[in-house]
Amino acid sequence: MNGQIPFDAFPSSAQQQLKMLDTNGDGALDTDEILAGLATLKREQYKSKMYRNFLIALGALSLIMLASVFGLTYSVIQITKESEVKAGGVLTVRGTSEPVRVASTEFDVRNGTLTSRTMLNMSCSNGTCPASPIMTAQSTS
Image (cartoon, rainbow, N blue to C red; front, side, top):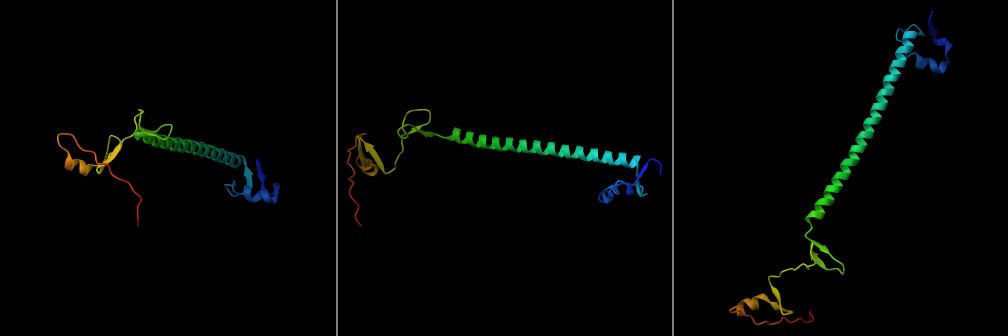
């Protein structure tokens, strides 16, 4: 048993774990088995470090992807807006101070008076139309 350490020299709690290093099954650890065990330990530490670095890189890449998706979504929303609300709550055409105008197929405002388009179309001649205002009243049930 020259250059070997018998398992009996170790505490009983460590003997079971050391048996994993005993590749020839002679009940003792020799130099080659100890060096092989250390090489295996070093390989496992390298793998662990590699996996940790891979996980960190994957996490960073995931955060970058999440930020890009958020940024692109925000940019698309901002670019496609055609109107914006200015101070005082006025809805304006984007990039100007002109208020947004909406059209109605039923009504028109002529000289500050709300009029019916159907009435205008029936009684218009030569571009001059009499403005007959639409009355508003309290609804009844």
